[in-house]
Amino acid sequence: MHSFVEIGLALSLLYAAVGIVFAVAFQVRGLGVVDSAARHAGWFFCALITPGVIALWPFLARRWLVVLQNSGKATEAAVFISPEALGRLHQRAWWVILFVAPIILVTALIFRPSERSLPELPAVLAPAARH
Amino acid sequence: MSNHYRAIDWNRQKRRYDLVLAAIVLGGAAVFLGVSAWVSPESTAETLILRTTSITSFFLLHVVLAIGPLARLDGRFLPLLYNRRHLGVTLFLLALVHGFLAVFQFHALGDENPLVSLFTAYGRDYAVLQNGRFQIAHFPFEPFGVFALVCLFLLAALSHDFWLRQLGSGLWKSFHLLVYPAYLALVAHVALGILQTERSPVLPLLLGLGFVTIASLHLLAAGQESKRLRASKLLASDGFIEVGTTDGLVEGRARVVIVGSKRLALVRHLDRIYATSNRCRHQGGPLGEGQIVYGCLTCPWHGWNYQPNDGCSPPPFEEIIPTYRVRLEGTKIWVHPVALPLRTSTEGPLVPGANLSTGTTSKL
Image (cartoon, rainbow over the protein chains, first blue to last red):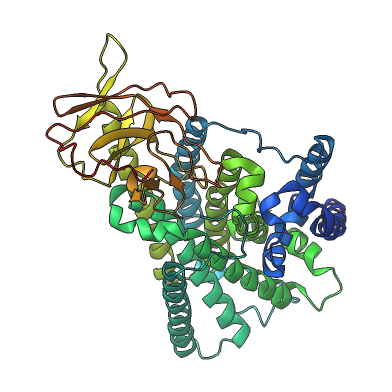
């Protein structure tokens, strides 16, 4: 478990590091190419979109490549899902919440320890963790 | 409506919205902080801030989830919907403060990487199965919080219009459905975390009340939508569908109608009736809740404009929405569910009793 977490963390940090490098390059050269409305946008706008650029850098890199291959013409985003399918997905998400949320809450309340047998916290967490 | 991005498109409504939001968040947090400090004077400052940020952000999440169905059920709640992204970003920032403080207080300054400890501390020190019994209080609850924080981060990071354009409205809205797994993860985080040690009935009651409230609102809104879908009638011969009458269709105002499985905007402009798609090309706002401004059907969310006769935005803008054929039989309005080819210019049927000699100069 420990090594899985460490590997996962290392991969996430690597992804974020590549994202940061990409974000710099994208803001300098790619932003106005991919979206003409962003050509004269201010620094605050650039700062606002940076976290998203770091998170979705593979998607933006592909879009940038497509625009360059299309002789610099930005294209409309592809239709990912129709409004009707989105509505159905929304409904299904809600049916899941309707059943799962009460199950979690009720289970947690039924099986929680009695007052006398409250779990002892490990030394590294106590005493600051005593709420 | 602009074809250049700004960080935030400030207007009077947005400023008012944000001021009210700041007042509620800061005021509520101050009250909670004060009450907590009075009830538990032995609690440290970090503990109080942890509790305050958690309760405030969880409350905001419920507000965010309630706004959608509320706005469907009663149009007076629509202004809450217009700048919901500001609520979402505030919610994420509060959750981030909570997350940072929790990692620092419970996992830092030890001999383990705090981010690794976040996922492994419980497994290292507790056993979920102990003496053959399931110990739910030993179940690691913090990873649920991390998952929720990642979902909320994506929602906040992708909230700008730039992302709507890059991702397309379908993918953008799909990302925003992450608010539901975030909600479930937070219910688990609270239920398996603080509820295992906190014995006051207040917290479980609040959690239950929050869930019942948003579930009820969603079920009511879904019921209303089903009723409207069932009420739409079909003309068998040529496919037109009756959507209502001209009574109550006020000059310059639009109305949402159900045509088959689609929601369309019906608008009366210069005594002629037009039907367009109900979805604004900007963020999918409900054009049927808008009105005519300078001859254009205007989205109530962010003011994007479309000419009702052909669905085109006025130059220099290039957005287009589909338009639909409209027929009048007396005062009854019939609309064909198949859209006309884009940019097709139509002259909508004249409302009975309209005076052609007045107001016929087109502002289009």
